[in-house]
Image 1: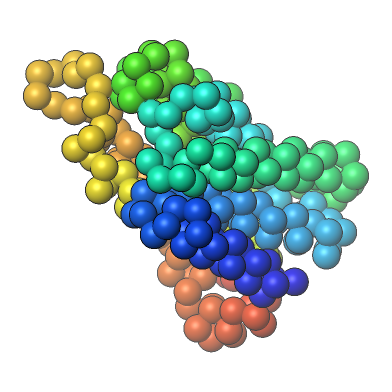
Image 2: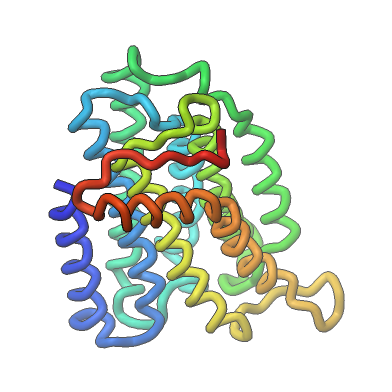
Length: 264
């Protein structure tokens, strides 16, 4: 199932890149949202294959859903943060909508269908202050690519929320055994790849990102966007080491668990 999910996703990504985007570099942003969708699919596979919600953070999923809603509030009708190739016309938004539906479906599985196995006591990271901080920072640091302050701020809030959405998942892991089931580890790893792809695009587009600067000559929005991507990768540095170590030792198809010793 895991290899099939990877195969379908890679095939879809290559098809979009070659036949829709016609090889344009900006399609890397669409590849990023496809990877994000794959990550959620992998977590759904874990939920269905194990029949359990153990190891899955509902709070992380809630932040992810909020991040997607904020991003879609901009990208569904404004062009400021979309790829300039043809994949930005419909494919990008369709993938985000699909991901949002999957996240809501997974939340239903965790909080309703498999509630008895959900580790609610350990999934305890306070997310409301984190979410509020994201909205405040987005209000202060947003770009003006849409030339609509509210929706520019919402897009930036979506970025920040997506970055910190990994924190409740890592918190849950540290509060339990320090071990991650294979599909949860794939979920975190693929989400990191998604962020790496979007960060690469933003790095190349950094001089095109504009804002109303607080300090003359300093583009705070560009640095905030790049810094957010860097923070996400730094948060996952320990995980990435142990994940790659286990993949090398066990092989991707036979990966069973990842021990995250430094998080315990």
